[in-house]
Length: 150
Length: 150
Length: 150
Image 1: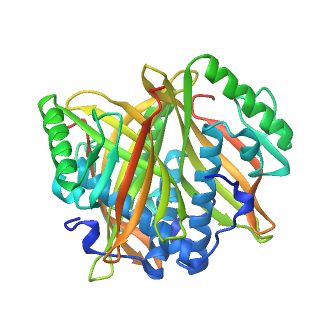
Image 2 (image 1 turned 135 degrees about the horizontal axis):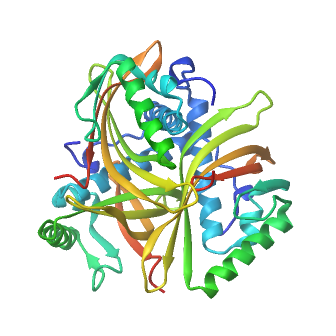
Image 3 (image 1 turned 30 degrees about the horizontal axis):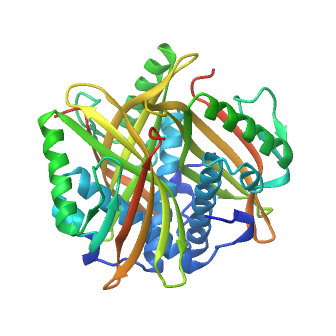
């Protein structure tokens, strides 16, 4: 995101199709994660995807590792009677010369305690590299930053 | 939502039109509710719509009942000096063989006290069945779940 | 926003293009603000834009004033070890007869303290008048209301 809006009009039908597809993709991806469908969630990443998020001790690479990390988190949440909800939005989509997409989005993570309160857990920025595999979008690289960390 | 993104590419112009229409529809519907336009809000549902939400003691059916429930909530909020704001997003839209739409969305409800603080009130998942009446979308069925309830 | 959804079907390809463009525009505009790119942010407004928000003692007019107000806020946040994040959504877009756009959106502002908690700071409604300058969208008028103020 290096130029301002005035410099790059994007009102094309192709962009509208792409933008809707990206939003639908993220809606599905986050819903899979939040309902604990860890393998299906991992399948929205490329086979060798890299995932770098401050919550994990080190970057994860590959679907198996992603699914395992998701299962571990799901188990911890279940044990503590907590639900997480990943609300993503504000996606800024840039098509790259090689056809991949650079997408910067905001993600708020809400935490709810069963029988208790709901609150903001994390406020994150998510920088994705999306590619097309057999026609469908997948995340090849994800880098997440948290607003509460310096 | 039974398959993962890789299985169902959706990059068509028709889908983009539909997705934008759904987003615009929800924006208007929630804005009507939050500004207390209860009859106009109820008119975004079908005449015989069913609405099942944990906040109400039992499911509501029909526009008159919906408008009445909205008015009751609006009166309670006014009395307690509170404003609610329904922020929906993350919509996953699936067209059904009969032309209706199944839409799963996230909805965060914020509560603000006049002269006080704003906070997360509820984190919800909203499962809608949308149909077209005279060309425009309406909610035929809505089922809402809350993250803080088991 | 004076009529309900049933009265005005909008499922056209032109609307889908416009809706995607508006979302991309806001994503970029808010990301510029939140990363402290104050001049680039101000450039998403028209030269003579008016900006009326309860946080400022009086309405601001013109890019120079907007950039200065943004820099002042950025400096205060940096000093207090706080990050703000403007999460906009629920945009309802109406094209006016003169080609300008009236857009009503919700904006949640999150505040995170470095090394501390994240929370809801403000819940706002944002009423924009958007115009096209050299093909690209710019904000000509913005009026923001806060849910915590009467």
